[in-house]
Length: 114
Length: 111
Image 1 (tube, rainbow over the protein chains, first blue to last red):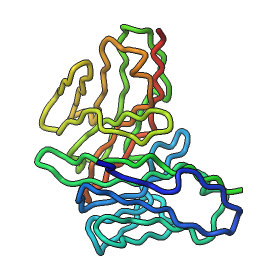
Image 2: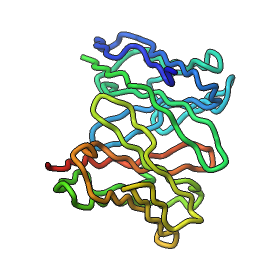
Image 3: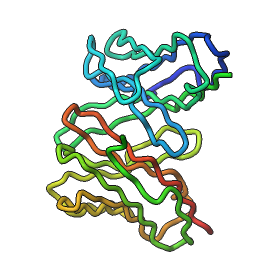
Image 4: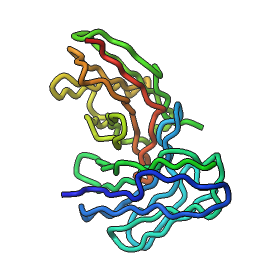
């Protein structure tokens, strides 16, 4: 059982380059999320998708776009990378339960923009 | 604007001691409060969670204390072990079912 799988694990980009971070989950969850993690800032929500076919902005959406390709896959695109986007990116998926919401996270993508 | 404030930023505890991490929130619409544990190079993983109609929840050595009137909740790790060394995040779920995370606490348990 793979859970949430992110690719790539590491990436170095030059300023202005574009790239897409891929995420797939095999738990049949409806909701998926993209977070970025920076020192002292915790996890900040970039975009989320409550269900297949819908996407919404989170706390820090500027400079990013997302696509909910199907129920399993949720991708994050940087159209023109900037040094401020150097971060660790986490994809997560979740499902509402009777008691709460457990979010399952991928292993993360460490992105450096030079 | 951080809706969930977490302290301390870092914590060093001796093996066998008690680790305490605190969080405070403003949004009274939050209805679910989980704690996540993250080891280096890994994604966060759910550790324990509480709903606001309960004042305390205990799972093994981990306890959440919840004070609804003060809008504060805390994680207590009893008999802390070196294997507990990790970063801990509190979180809160809002009306849109999103989780808002605190800034994290890096816990080091000395052997």
